[in-house]
Amino acid sequence: MIRRAAFFALVLGVPACHRHDEAPAPPPSASASPSTSPVSFGGLPKGPRVYVSNEASGDVTLIDVASGKALASLPVGKRPRGIQRSPDGSRVYVALSGSVAAPPGSNAAPAPADPSAHGIGIIDTARIVVAGRLGVGSDPEQFAVSRDGSRLFVSNEDAATASVVDIASGKIEATLKVGEEPEGVAASPDGKWVYVTCEATGMVEVVDAATSKVQKELSVGGRPRAAAFLPDSSKAYVTSENGGTVTVVTLPAHAIAKVMKVEGRPMGVVIAPDGEAAYVTTGRGGTVLVVDTAKDEVVGSIRVGDRPWGIDVSPDGRTLYVANGPSDDVSIVDTAERKETSRVKVGSKPWGVVYVP
Image 1 (tube, one colour):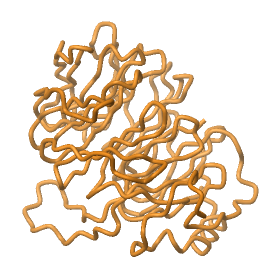
Image 2 (image 1 turned 135 degrees about the vertical axis):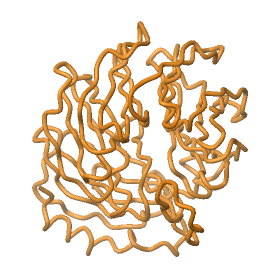
Image 3 (image 1 turned 30 degrees about the vertical axis):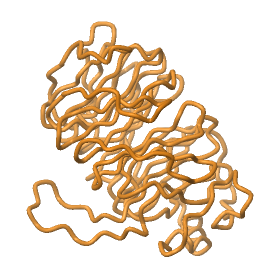
């Protein structure tokens, strides 16, 4: 259960989290002071935590790994969705958007966006405080952190672009034209490639990380949502929601090796640390699929909460954390048993999950 005292102390002590009219603050490494003041969390336990972005409530919930309980929620801004950590775990980055969410299939005209709310929020994980915000272009949804932690590769959904951002300077180094409605972003572990999935075109844009240029397009069809690479960067797995498929891509040729038709609507994907399995959330299917990456076949299915999307795995590969949007909770899954062991209540409409050792 979230500690109310910590939560309200946080809300009252960090007013800048609710302001969107100020210039983006510098990252914690910059010489200028951060945009917010540290807030004491008293006796919150130390150790590994899971950070969960809650799109509807505008906050990030911290889950204590040892106890499997929510500790507190940190207000971060409008529509927090994509969430990642720096390589050293000292920061968590979360994508914020001033665009107004529309129900799937809605034909109504979209409400006006709030451009001042767009950005990537920076959470200092030692102090548990929002330490700044990076300007990364319009409507960021997902992003990837470069292998050395110096850059972000960001999808700008409503602009059909991808931005490359230098974290230290806060400057956009490049803006790439990609397909309509770019969403998922994944960086290969060897640091050479970035994949950007484009929902409206059914394409994956293959970006050379060194030059920040699109080198190839892959047609995967069916509203591609996310991508993930094996630890040795030899293969990538791309989920396509409407197509009901997981596409296997081999590198460095970026060739489609196999298209797996699966049950449900594939959404998020994460790779086990040893590379032996890919775990795929299925949205309305309510499950996590287990893919054997040697055979590229589905070998298991794990029942979780309602419409699972965001997913991450612990560094030892034993535990999955799965965001269930409609039920406002996170499923904790034992990978050996292939079984959900508990659920943790978080904020409203949890979207993304990241494990911070």
